[in-house]
Amino acid sequence: MPNPDVFSALASRRSVRGFLPREVPREDLERIFTAAQRAPSWCNIQPWRVWVTSGATTERITRALLDATQRGAPQPDIAFPGDYPEPYGTHRRECGKALYQAMGIARNDTAARYDAWMRNFRAFGAPHVAIVGEDRRFGLYGALDVGCWLQSVMLCAQALGIATCPQASLASFPSVLRAELDIPADVAILCGIAIGYEDPDVPANACTTTRAPLADNVKLV
Image (tube, rainbow, N blue to C red; front, side):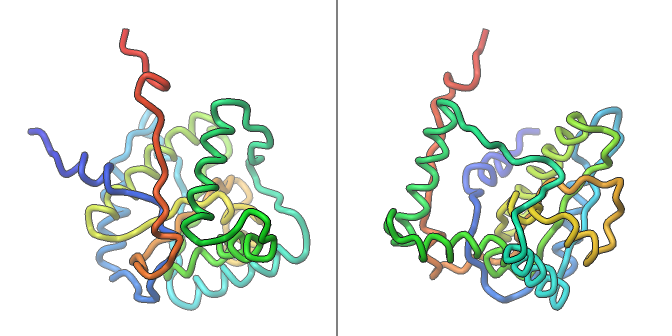
């Protein structure tokens, strides 16, 4: 049976960068992550390993990440891209331009841009953070599986009216996360997800990004 709700959730989902302090009921969190367990994976290995924080734990994690930014440069388990050849550079610049325009931050306002960047490590005030990793032994194919799982989480959350923002920045300091959450060394930390209810008064949430025409990415042959 066709399910148009999937299309609606995909069309309306976006990265939210400002959250209300209200926590998501535990039963809704469990519903989201239980449903995402149905995500496909290589030989059904299900390599995602996830730690979902609430309350004081979220505050402790984000505070530790902010402190880490003052002590040194990020050292993620998986190196972030350092070069963005075309057309990827254009996509990246357009995204940044749209975001900073929504926030009313000028290109030459270094201090405001720094403050906006630091909000990443606060998970934009979200009451919940999911730290997402994979068993290191499965490498790229395990990461592909985690990508399927990640989209499943975000679409299920969207269907329940719960906002999300996938964040590489939350994986910038894996040693901090391992110490705070007892994450074993054999798990590579890939990203985080900010989870909560959107604060409509946060200017960044007015940001909308574009998508390339289908033919730029997909060839029907």
